[in-house]
Image (cartoon, rainbow, N blue to C red):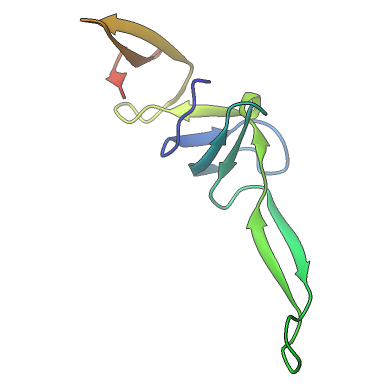
Length: 102
């Protein structure tokens, strides 16, 4: 998977198309990611104790990796990610400006 935790991504499909966000969590086996502020879902929570009120919690839901593009930290453009090897170390590379990033 070419997207990592902490990357800034652009959403290219779905209801949040065109919005940017930071990757919170990655699920490689499911090929999905959690993006901060994107794909917000509402969850109804029952009261746990007597006298406590029930509430509706909003939290981000997983989004498929194919619906996002990584934003290059150097040029700031959405890009595809490639790989290059330098002295037995593998780096991700921006396909637009050839900038290496971790």
